[in-house]
Length: 520
Image (cartoon, rainbow, N blue to C red; front, side, top):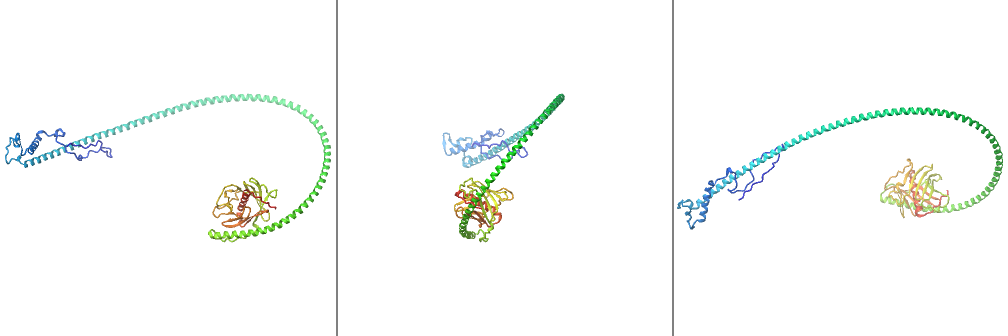
């Protein structure tokens, strides 16, 4: 059998201290048995004389097994051993002798294997010791080289530091020399500048003396010329005085003639105006009588229509209040009392549209309309300048701007909106922009916020709701304009006015309505 040897470790692990540990005294890996003929150390190799007895016994055993009970050319097996006499008690003549030979051979083979294993162990330990010493020397060499490299690096750093110091010193010396040179140049420049200024001052002094001499000569010439001009002016003034007196006399005569002619013209004009006033008084009396007759007829007709409209409005208002109260109770939105509130007559507002014509026949986008919001005493509360499709400005009675309302088509907001049977009209908080700090638009953005609900067609009556309660109505009293009946606090008044104005703008634009004007 061919024997194998385990691979040797070339680099044992290093310890924490940096040194390589010595090889451990342990048995080598298990080796396969090797024949006697394998190479052994020279000092432990067996000689042929030492191996001969075992070979002799083995040969004899083999011959005995092969030739037992046989004869050949040389005779029986016993003839192979002439030096020994075969007899009945010969140990080589039976199996007992062969068993002894096997035991001896096995014992010698075991001893050889033990010696061979010991030799392999000694060789392995020597190889491990040699590798350890070699690695230790390599490690020490590395440590020495590292220290040498660190020493060289320190020397190099010191050299570089000294060179940098030398360069810095040279740079400072160069800067000092440059500064001294610049200072010398600056002193030279200042000296030259002082010399130049001195020369310039001397030149200016000479020039001033020359100018002074020339000025004296010029003053003397001017004085002579002035005296000559004064004499000429005195003579001219005397001539003008004579001409002025003659012109005043002529103008006085012309003024007297003009005054006489103007007085005659005034007399003729007064006579014509008296005749014209007499004719106008007669025409105005006839027109007044005609207007009084028409007003009486219109008042009777409007009174009947107002009574019918009032009955219809009260009926609709009662229906709306009952419907809203039932819805509020059903949805449990508001648990307060939702009974109808009585609207006082003093809280009725009137919209007065100021225009030259009695009927606006060509109202389009871009047209400007002026409105006045009056109370029952016909006193102006707000003055509104509304530009259809544009910007509406609300002024107070003292001509101070309060609010500006912008008209943005297509803008919707779920909290501030106007509803009708025809859909939703956008109305948003951002449209109310206060122009003064004392009148800010402060409105809560909640689901129960105030909205303006439209009942019926455009141009009809509108119901103002706040927190699911009716707080006011907007009535279209054609041809008397629009009336806003409010049953809420004064702080909400401006919001209702703004809602109504935007409603009117939308009505004018979308429906091409021709509103009648208030005759106040």
